[in-house]
Image 1 (cartoon, rainbow, N blue to C red):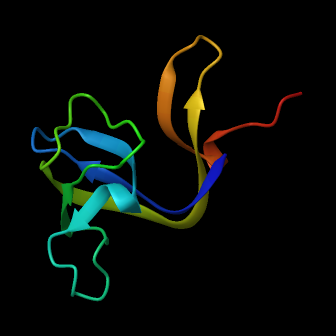
Image 2: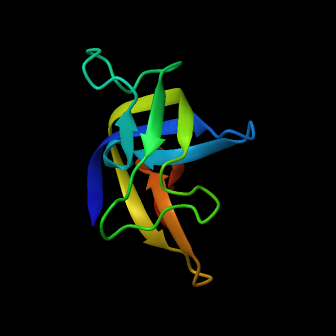
Amino acid sequence: MPWYGNLCAVQLPNGEIHRWFAWFELRPQNPYSGTPLAPGSYATVIESAGHGKPPHVPIGTMVRIVKCIPNTIFYDSILSIGEYHRWLAEFELAKPL
């Protein structure tokens, strides 16, 4: 089932860039700023009922937003090798031949 909304790439406290978090997995540091999830702003990783999160990013981690892709289609996927992959943006997927 496709999801629709904003995806954000974030910088973790150790400097690693992680993509993607869906908008509903992040709580802006200042939710009243008008553009709460924008590059350069900070957010906290929150629990997302029913969805996995990267095991190395605990709930409550403060991250810096690096890039946001607004209004895009994305998927929660099981790869052909049986591994689970949380959020693949539609533009990252090719149609089968």
